[in-house]
Length: 398
Ligand code: DSN
Image 1 (spheres, rainbow, N blue to C red):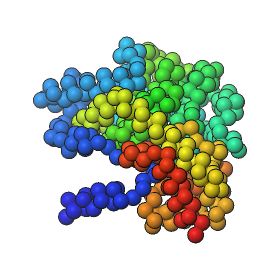
Image 2: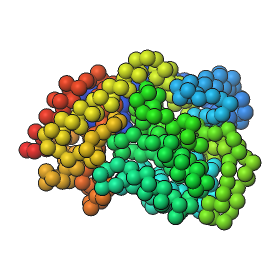
Image 3: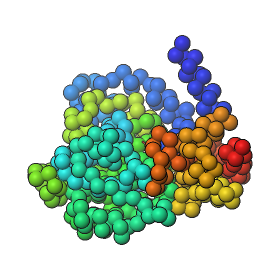
Image 4: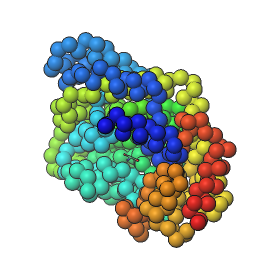
C-alpha cells in the first residue's frame, strides 16, 4: 500500500547521510500545511480576483505569504511585486522569460556544464528552444570571470541576463551582474533557488536591489515545500529590441506581466496547500535561529571541503563559500556515476554532476556534488563533517 511506501521512504531518509545540496528536511509544521485541507480548494486567479468563490480565507493566506516574502528579503511592496503561485522553479523561470522578453529574443545565462540550470536555456529544455540563448561559464580556476561575461554581453547584446546557478560553489556578485546588464541595456534576472536560505540568513549577498526579477524555489536552503516564488520590479519594463524583431508593450509593469505569465499563461489553479507551507517555512526563516542555521550550513560546507582537500580530493575552484562543493573524482579512476553509487551503497547520498570543462557526458560525468543543508538541519556540525569526509575518502579509495 502507498502508506507503507511513504513510511519506508521516511525510514530511508532517516537512515542515510543526505549530501544532496538541493534537498532538505522540512519541519513538522511545513508537512502539516502540505497535508492540510487547503489542498481541496481551487483558487485560479490573483488574490481577491478569483474565478472561484469561497476564497476569502485563501485570499488572506496568499496575502500573508506575500507579506512574509517581502519581510524575509527586506524589500518593500511599493517597489516589488511577489508571485507565490509557481508550481516549480522551472515554471517560475519560464514565466520570467515570457514576461520580460519576446519568444526568439536573446538571453545570456550560465551554461549547465559550468553550473547553470537546465532552464537557463539548455538545448534540451523548452527554454533553450523558445529563446536564443548564449552561455557564459567559469574560468579554468572554477570562478566566474566577470570581465569575460561583460565581453560576451557586449558582443551578444542580450535582452535579458540571467545569473544564478545550481552547481557553483562561490558567492555571486549581483552588483557586477547589474553593471554588465546596464552596460548593454538588458534586464537582469537572478535565479537564487539554491542560495535563497543563505540570502535570508545573511550569509550570502542579496540580489536586491540589483536584479529586476528574482526567482527561487522554496525547497532547498529555504527549507520549505516544493514550489517557487517570483519577485519582480513594479516598474515599466524597459525594452530594447532583443533580437526577435518584435516589440513589447514598454508601458506594462514588469510584475503585472509576471503575474499574467504564471496565470493564465502557464498554470491553472495554484496549489494553495503548498503556498501555506511556504508561509510556514518563511515564518521559520524570520526567526533568529534560521540565521544560525544558514551560517552553520556554510561552515559545514567549508569544513567538508577543507577535509576532503586535505585527504587529496580535487575540489572545483579550490573550496566553497556557500552550501555546496563539487569534487572531481576522475583522479581516483572513477566517474561521477561510479562514485555516487559506491557512496549510496554505504548510505551516503550525493548526486553525480558535471564539472567545468568536463570531457564526459551528463549521465556519467566526472564529478559529484555535495551539500550541507540537510545534514545541518539534522544538527550536524564541523566535527561531523570531518567524519563524513573520512568516510567518503575510505569508500572512494577502496
Ligand atoms: N535539480 C535541482 C538541483 O538539484 O540543483 C535544480 O533544479
